Amino acid sequence: MRRRAALRRLGAVTALFSLDGKTALITGGSRGIGFAIARAFVDAGARVLLAARGAAGLEAAVSQLGIAALARPCDVRDPGAVADLAAWAWEVAPPDVVVACAGVSPYYKRAELVTPAEWDEVLEVNLRGAYFTAVEAAKRAFAAGRGLSIILVASVAGIIPLERLAPYSAAKAGIIQLAKALALEWADRGIRVNAIAPGWVETDFTRDLFASRHGQRLRADVPLGRFAAPEEVAGAALYLASDAASYVTGSVVVVDGGRSVR
Image (tube, rainbow, N blue to C red; front, side):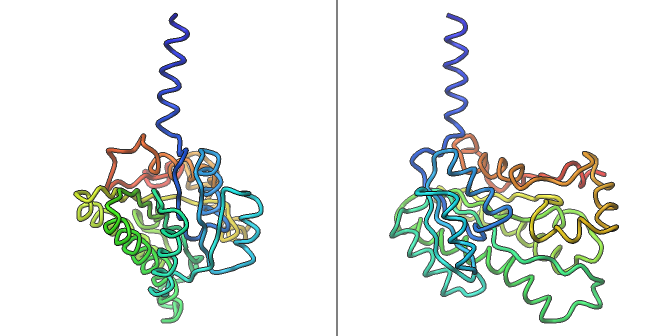
């Protein structure tokens, strides 16, 4: 009897993290953290709608994820393209979850050496893109009278100062405050908005940096002594997307191996 009761309780807890019957729209979903989130969501029972700039990367991602995935190219710097993406998503299957994960690699250089074009690119993709993704999704949810979980992917660089990452740090700090502001504004409409702040994660963006001598120093600064795998960030996204986080909004989940508390 006790074992059956324990199994029932375990089943109830597991069900909290299930995404069965849910649909998620994920920008930046063709590789890296975005793709890891997509895979985790599919494994949890969700259907995923992926967006990214590169059609080839999207095709490869859909091929790996199977029939649970569809994709559409989108440049999140263009508000019109983001509006079209939202219209497409709501026509295919109104999302229950929207993840803004589109981003560009930070330019690792001293602030005075950053060009105006480099500054604009980092801010436009990482911050402006997240803003329009969230707003267009919210407008559709308002019109349909639906609740929604919006997850903005920020960075530990938006919480603690990191050298030679001024534009990236500014963009990611903006995302964190954006998540809090939108959570406050939209809570009464049934929309939860949260952010994830990963530390150093092993992706295509960071491979060369991590292989360098400086990468070894970065690893030494992480209390857990290693860089994160994308799947470890995906776990935080799964939590925020699920019913387990139904009372969570305006929060920042830090996944950095302890880097921000050093």
